[in-house]
Amino acid sequence: MPPIALPHDAKAGPTKPEVRAVTLSKLALGPEDHFVEVGSCTGAVTIDAAQRAGRVTALERKADRLETTERNLAANEESIRADVDLRHAEAPTGLPDDADALFLGGSRNFEGVLDHAKETAVDRIVMNVSRLEVAGEATAAFRERDLLEEVVQFQVSHGYELAGATSFDAQNPVYMLVGSATPPSDAEGDSSTVAADGGTRTGGADG
Image 1 (tube, rainbow, N blue to C red):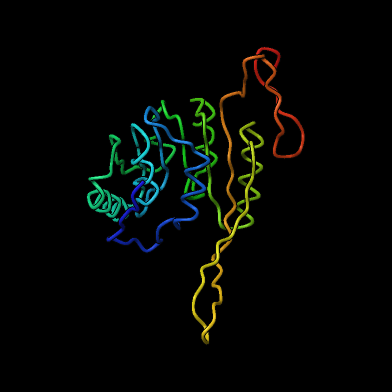
Image 2: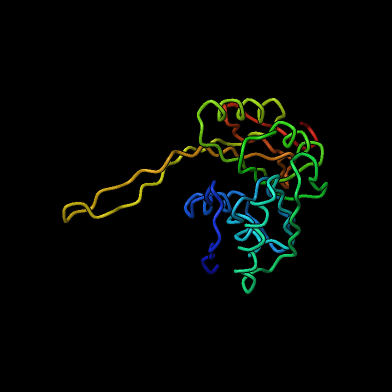
């Protein structure tokens, strides 16, 4: 995919490229997918997703940030393959009922969003969190709804020149929660998988 351009800024800043790469890998978007983002901000994830999915719905509660999303989308229009619907709404209000993949870039009202994802059987759910306490609350919320598949913690450091050598500037750690509201299955009907807590998660006819 071509690199995206973000000529227009929002004070919150975009999701970093390395974090977007992992996020999109977990979402595994295809041309038939309907991707939904909660909190589009600069539009960085929205644009990346729109290069892969068939449809994209992006919600943003702040009008100025939604305008930034729209302007950055226009700057990348040649690489956009999806039909994109931008909505000025605060989730869970405004969420569609037919999403295949859902990304939460912030923690506001996340429990209501997860309830909606559970009710509408969203297949792939990713939530990124930067604060430890919120990560704990979000992990518990995923587990309570039987959504959690894995928790990933990672940190990216960028090199810079210092006194003729290379030093590194570490970015804030990211806690990534990955889940699904659809039961796992396989051709044999045995769908036991290792859960995030080390136990097993079973779905299918005998689940």
